Image 1 (tube, rainbow, N blue to C red):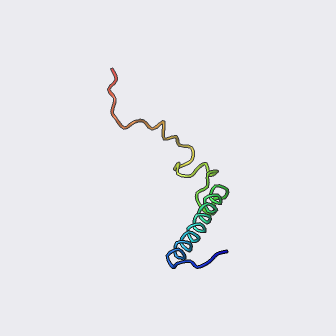
Image 2: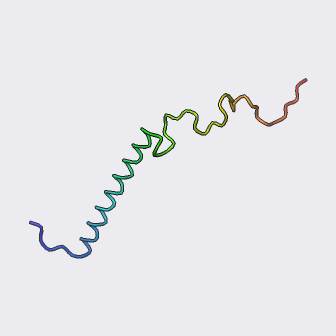
Image 3: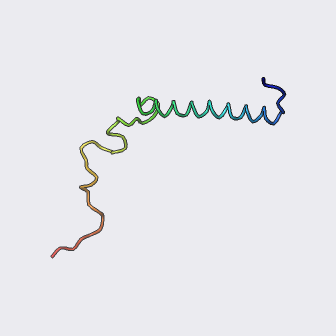
Amino acid sequence: MGGYRGWRLMVLEAFIIILTFTELLYLLLIHAGMISSRYGPGYRDIGYGTGVPGTDPALKGTGIPESRV
């Protein structure tokens, strides 16, 4: 079982192991960010990026002057 492995194969195995742990950490941090806003903006934070509360950007108009008769 096992046997001799060349140095290239050992480097490839180490690289794959490092990538596996990096991806696992990445997935855990994404999951933690979805649950808590401590690790990111959080998806439950309703007011994130909307500016002043009580203002609706859809009601501001388009910025194009309109001529009414």
